[in-house]
Image 1 (tube, helix red, strand yellow):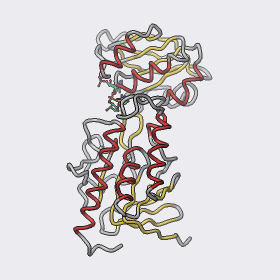
Image 2: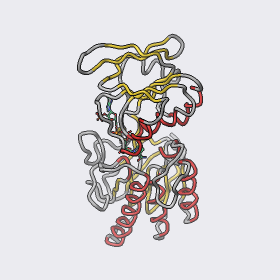
Image 3: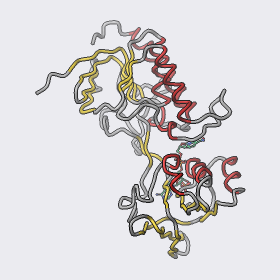
Image 4: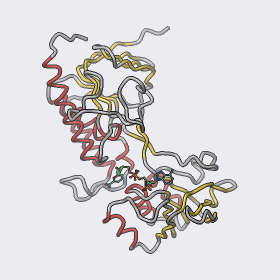
Length: 315
Ligand code: NAP
């Protein structure tokens, strides 16, 4: 058995996206020794967004560029970063919270959960088989492979419609397959899609199978009222049907809603003392970079107040 290095912090933040970095900035600036752990590279989901045009102060900025700015800001205040960690165990229930990775044991009085969310799967035949061979959950990463080809985006929310618009930069045709006849996306985004000649909507339809040989060649959709199946020729399928929270590391330790999102109070406090949840992993009515950043600020300030109120807690 290897002896793992023990590292102690005032605040440990799980997840280096906008919520995590914002919490880090406020926490470190409040003189708390702060670390951010991420099982991936830091930057979170927005790093994959081509453009962000609703973060105040920036009328248009690349997602990666904005996250770089968050990270540099956190660096300035001395937040320590541990990207690509392999987390083996998390114990949140005691005063000394512990996060065990493959080579370290992190201990802290405060843990802020900022683990975000990931795309939901369609769970239909062919989805897993053609993943990476036509099925993609990231238009920014894979869009360029579809120059002059046809792609199908599934979903009617902001992600689906925005990514469909993005895909028209490459593809000659983009279908948006949506299960209802009205989109959930913001009106401004809907209008852009409606006015884009490369986009064709297939409403009242759910995908039931993805077919192909070496790569995706078609998607079968079923009309929700007539139950009739239609085969649509496409080279790519991009499911954007919502998100599911990244909570598997700590499931069962804190109160979560039926969809798994973490319940918090207005101070971002979870059902466990000293444990906060922020950003997309939280049960929140709006998932944006600005709300994630705002959650982070609230959680870090709440943590500072909590630590001031319990001077007896030692790590
Ligand atoms: P979302 O808003 O939850 O939309 C999911 C879409 O997928 C809905 O249209 C839903 O249909 C459909 N859907 C769900 N399950 C399905 C299934 N099994 N089969 C077929 N269709 C299914 O998810 P999102 O677009 O990923 O956005 C997630 C969050 O991030 C939202 O809060 C969103 O506002 C935010 N976001 C914001 C921006 C922005 O402001 N620029 C950009 C991206 C994301 P129904 O409509 O019938 O439920």
